[in-house]
Image (cartoon, rainbow, N blue to C red; front, side, top):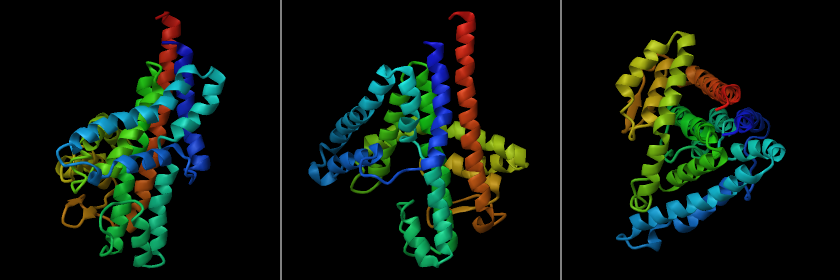
Length: 318
């Protein structure tokens, strides 16, 4: 491990956040994740396979997709000179996470509701897979802010976590790319419908890869709510409602957010999370602030840790 590599990795995290805030997610058919999505869409059709081979096909194509998507990131991270790495890596890392876009989607739903419930329903379809035709204004807001909260882990903390962790071994960009491929496959195939067999591997791998980051996200949320005086409430709601949502990652983050912000997330017929001391119309800004605070604090602490490790390695001669 070369100390300079860790310093570069720390700088890349901060620069990638700056790039994200400046340009967001450009809408381009040649964006790496757009290309990834088209490839998954090509092989991810259950009708292409008999039911007996769908799970095996899902495993095979999961591996193939992860390898193909990750390979260019690996090559750049391994062979780019340090100056080119410092310039290019923030853009490649930014391709694998979405902070500004996440905010824009959620706030876009809120803005659309000002023009009527039908506009809100149309806009929230871009964020969630649930049926939106019968949602009222409160449930539209809930769907948007639930998606924002869940994606605090999936779209921000997890990619940065794997970049930082695997930068210790010189594989930061590659690790982030593997996660982005895995999460995109889950988003497209990880459903309990006709895609269940083909998407089984995608769903399980996403659960595994998000397990630690989801708990890191929850820790940072509780730390943020400690500064707001609502950490105890967030902890209680997390303990009570964290398992109401299917899966073992998203529920604890959503419950901590709902408790800390004093709101209620409600998916009709599936779960109700939080006490709802205030409405989402009133408490939505607190959710946006919490997402910003966790993103910035996690990135700053992670970057500082990498730079500190570099200093320790240099000073001790490890």
